[in-house]
Length: 348
Image (tube, rainbow, N blue to C red; front, side, top):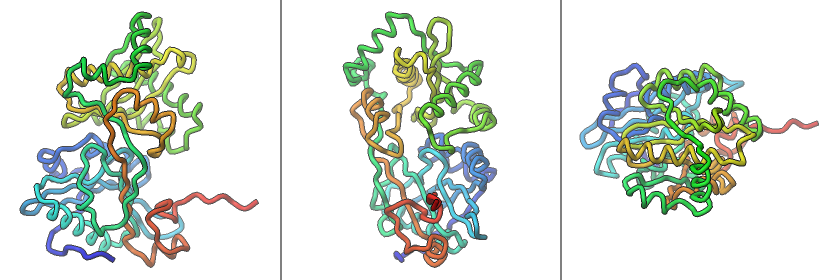
């Protein structure tokens, strides 16, 4: 067990606590850190939304989490919401940030949680030193972003040649991309997204309900934007883009299978790049491959920029004895985590 800081006070706050939004007013954050987003995620996961909050001289820190019951037991663990809801902090002293994170770990341990799994933010990246000695860290791969502080010409020339050729062809053919501010095409987006997940044999967790999508649209008004691509009068591609504090995130999207050969997703992302630049955003983060893999999705995204960021997850065993009893093995933060949630095949 690592040394922990016991001098800093940590509060576990709910989304309705005014301190949550007060913290976001002073700490650069993404839409993944918004209390309404964490609440939606907690409902989807069947858990309870909370955040570890530290406000001490020289450091302010917020870590959004979802408290989940562990099946087959009366214990609970913690996971960050989908996306990159990593700890965020306002401090100029890495040692103070580490002290705050250390105090958070101790508070969660004292609260009886078994483990914590957190996805770190590739753009709002806290230094690795801030996590030193506090659980394990796994790097999964890289993500892609577009630097919107560059000129449009610089951004365009940062796009891979084959992508540029495809975009020029789409322009010649009159393909139209636009942001749907009214949500008129939200149902079409949902249908396209679910069809795309079925074609890709995606895991069950990616088949979100219509209520969830509507919640994203209604509760994150001003932070969630719907981009669509129209070809010959039909919407053939659509995607949700999150926006907060100069960061635009390519969140979820779907394509019409019949239009795949026309590469409408390239048109959508290129339009989002131009739209976000006009809004004064600093970065469009596209993410990476599935689970951080160097796969076809990563290859596609890499065609828009050569800017890369590491994607890491932070894993902490908070109660070693309970973890061992639940998983039947010694705690290990390098493999599937937490081990007791791994789906094991049944013996035939």
